[in-house]
Length: 319
Image 1 (tube, rainbow, N blue to C red):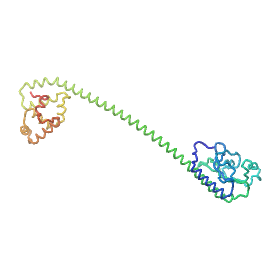
Image 2 (cartoon, rainbow, N blue to C red; image 1 turned 30 degrees about the vertical axis):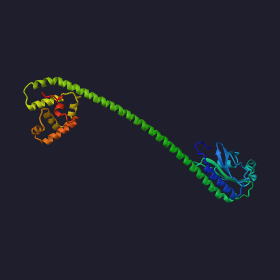
Image 3 (cartoon, helix red, strand yellow; image 1 turned 90 degrees about the horizontal axis):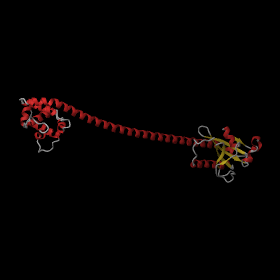
Image 4 (cartoon, helix red, strand yellow; image 1 turned 180 degrees about the vertical axis):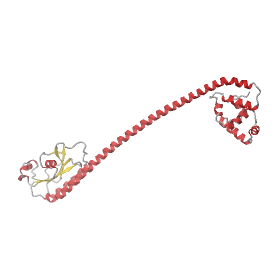
């Protein structure tokens, strides 16, 4: 009848029930108050009142006879009163197997879904029994135990749900960790691709620059052989600078310069002083000095002993 999905009754709850049946035994002055439990297809003794005259064994979960008083209560799911089994044909043999008890009053105990748990009952040797005066109290004890069984089942259900939630959470954490690992691998692969793409871009830029230089440099040399104005020479120098390889470090840094700073660099290459550059560009000498300071910073030229002109000359020679 019972299944593994039912929780085990804890010792603390059994102790509480034991107190209930001991109290009922004292009030009704009866020798035996029992709580039985359905186990598989049998009804067994779970608890017995601890009074000395109780003939039922005090220890162990003992099998009881089937098709007797408690069996009828469980099957019928209703209270059963047998005032004198000797006078009833249906129960005339019951006292012989129930330790001589001819009086019986029992109530069903159930799990919250109405599946039988067992019974709570009072038994005596005679019909004149005070237990009848405490029927309402027995019904209260029945409700109390049924409520305990409901709470016990709800507690187990809650624990099972919590366990499932914890397992689900663990599964989600594992999935998140796996996805994070996948993302890390994807990011690593993307970084490799980006580095490769940048490398390919640099190679392409160098090849393009070399090809342009191959075709344009002869033309520039031809132009340089003719008399040129100062402005034309500066333009020629700027064109040569743009044709330098992309891996030329000064050129890479030179691309960080602003147009105004490029103009200043061209005049520095022409050997102009800051005062002369200021006059040519129609700006103050202080502004030219400011540009020179920024140019040195962007070119990574930290040593004050190296002039901008001498630093740039190997890379940007003038004709």
